[in-house]
Each structure stands twice: as structure tokens, then as C-alpha cells.
Image (cartoon, rainbow, N blue to C red; front, side, top):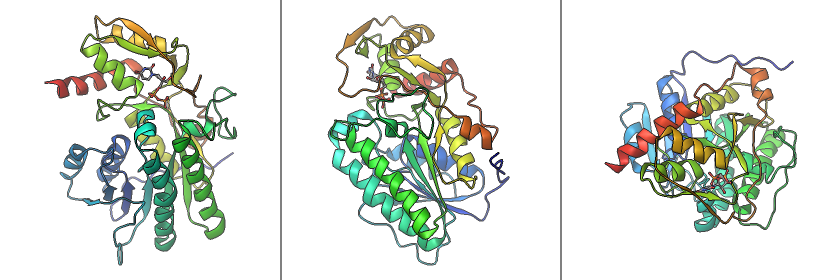
Length: 325
Ligand code: UDP
């Protein structure tokens, strides 16, 4: 049996670097660590991150921010103790794969490499935020961490899938070669307030379409599935993994699985929208099914996603509604 994780009551006196701090998920992670008394140093070049997230974080006295492209280099941290490094700087939406594929490949290779070098130098614990995309279009369902995936290396999603697979390989290499204290999480579909309204992903698209009573754009016949995790549940999982001593990857997500058609119908119903559902062509290499097996995470911690789909959708819709005013 793996050892159960001991979560610290406080992180006062500790310092964490969060690469990608202006992004949706990392901004919640920063707040969680700031709430535990940790000093947080955020890095971001705003390629997809929002200045408004940094404004929220800047209200915390323990938050420091550097505008920095981590694939070019890192700020000088000479004389600074660093306890934790979180590698969350990659754009992650399929629309980004078309617009900024090289930036994605650079940040997941050179950017991650720079962070790992810093972890080695500072003897810091390092966490790579990888993705369920490493499983590609999975042939086994639900996905377990031992499954090595079915990725098209030359398809339109490969800039992300393959660079995250490289980031995982690099992380394991720093662990094996230099004994850097690394962790890897594979993040499944996540949603919540602070997502970009034009992010292109299914939940922001459907909610914004439903709020405007516009057609809901289901790609393909909508039989493909996803499992949606509310952002605060994801952050708790990341924290749990950071405090294990296990170096191999952990899935994090909510195993509650919906077909995209069901998700569209559900959103229309929950938001009381007049929208009609229409079908548009399915993008190339769109994974047919995705659902995390989270037994590994549950074997080390009391992890249980708490926010149900309807509660999470309402919170997210309230956020998007507030942007429309
Ligand atoms: N999708 C859709 N309509 C949209 C946006 C996405 O039907 O307006 C589908 C997409 O084809 C995929 C699923 O929803 O099957 C999830 O897409 P998303 O871009 O959110 O993330 P992915 O899981 O594909 O990385």
C-alpha cells in the first residue's frame, strides 16, 4: 500500500514559484498556496494569461510577479530559497494549438527545462502539470496512469500532446539522473470562473452560447465524451500530489463522464436557455472518450471531487454573465 499523504497545516516560511500564474488554473493554485501562508512568485508572459488574474493575486502581500517568458529564461533568484516549483505555463486549449503551436512546444520543452534546472539548483520540489492529452485518443477506458497512450505525432494536436509527453520524459530524467524531487500530474478537462470567454473550449463556448440564446455548437454527433472537473477540486488534487513522495504520474480529474451532446442539453436546461443545439464538423483527432481513473490519487489521499456539474456550471455561468454586463 502506498503511504498516505500528510498535508501541511500551513506553508508559512515557504516559497513557491508558479509558472503560468496569470492562467485560469494556476491563478487558483496561487490563491490556494497564498491562503496557506506560502510566499508565491508568479511568472507569466501573458500569451494566454489574463492581467486581471494578476490583479486579483496582487492583493495578497505574499504575492510577487515577474512578467517573463520562461522559454527565454528565468528571473535571477540568487539568494532566494525556493521550496516548490509548479510548471503550469503551457497554453492548453485546442484553439491555441492552431494559433501558437511553436510557443506551446517551446514552453513545454525549453521552459520546463529551465524550471527543472532551477529546481536542481535550489533543491526545490518540482511539479509538472501534464495532461490527459498524453493518452491521445485512448483505446482503454477509463484511463489509468500505466496506459502509454495513442497519440498521433503529426496531427493538429501533437504540438501540445507530444510536447507534454516530452515534458514528462524530461521531468522523469531529472528525477533519475539528478534525484530532483519531481511530481507529475495529468490534468483532465477542468472548468470554472476565470476561463477565457473566447477560450474555445466546450464549457465556455456552450455557456456563453446558452447565455446569449445562440445556437450551441456541438462538434460531430456529440457522442464523444469528457469528464469535467471544477477548478477548486483540481487544485486540491495538485496539492495532494505535491505532498506525496511518489514520482510517477497521477491522474487528476472528476470521473463524472458526459457525452458532449448530454453536456449541451444539460447546460441549456440548467441555465434555462432558449438555445438550439446544432452540429458542426468534428475537429481532426478529437479524442472519442476521456475519463480519469483516479484510484492512484485516492490511494494516497482522501481525494474526492466535491463540486457537482450543476453547481460548477452555475458558478461558471455567473462569472461569464458578470463579464457580459
Ligand atoms: N466541442 C464542441 N463544441 C465546442 C467546443 C468543443 O462540441 O464549441 C467538443 C470538442 O470537439 C471535444 C469536446 O467538446 O470533443 C471537448 O473539447 P475542448 O476543446 O473543451 O477540450 P478537449 O477535451 O478536446 O481538449
